[in-house]
View 1 (tube, rainbow, N blue to C red):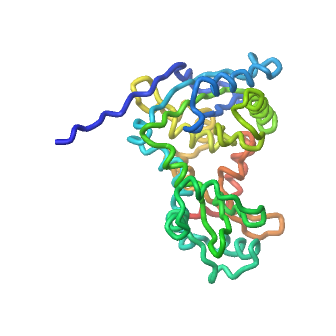
View 2: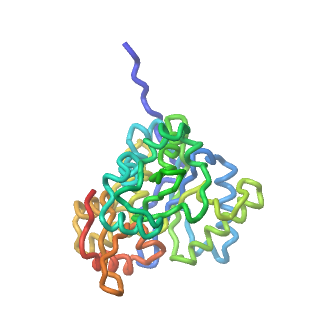
View 3: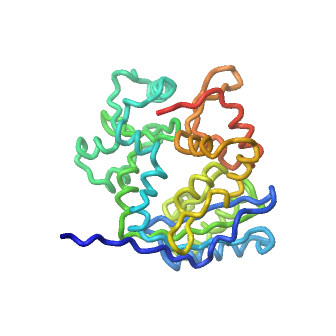
Length: 313
């Protein structure tokens, strides 16, 4: 009888100290990509933070953990984290909405119905590439298009959806651990992006990174309030490997205080596509993660309220 392997427990170096207590404070997750996990990168990121003027009064490291790959796999963290993009990577054209089809045709100047739009898993077989080869395949800027958070690359006669997903899931395996940090900060939007640029500068100086524009190959950070909740769903645990309540996250509490139910918030995170009216009165579709990027809690709430419908896949 095959012996069941018990996943390793997380190593919590700094236990999470709880939700921000003021509206000026937000919880920003930073986690290292599997291929970049290590003390050198963690130290470089902290050095970047310490270069921010008066950082001690504006940025606090309130959580530091090493989450084992087998633990994350057991929890299905990455499948849940990328669930919308995985759907498109597996099903391709078949789940494009009419809005996506129109925008696809406008960008590429081709008939949506006749175009060979395929998910990245089908592309692996058709193009004879492995996961990393597909991910790293370079295309000209005009051959790339992003719609509803889905990345399309024109490769020959094919239009491949989310070519990075097979590689991401392949790299996040049982042998690859993830270092996760949470910074509580009063910095918002561009101000916090400047903190990210400070981190990136140190990575460049120490030879860990070779291009400023590629910092997301080394680490991820929460780019908006809804992404903070999404990151908390995947990466917030105690020393026993139990998931900490999402009420520990300030924006989650903010939404509860506005009258949303736990069920509604969960539904918005799992089905993040919404319809909005633009200035011309036309309907557009956008991911709630992308449309609230760099926004405050109050502005993100106003965006959510302005949605005319939720798009269910």
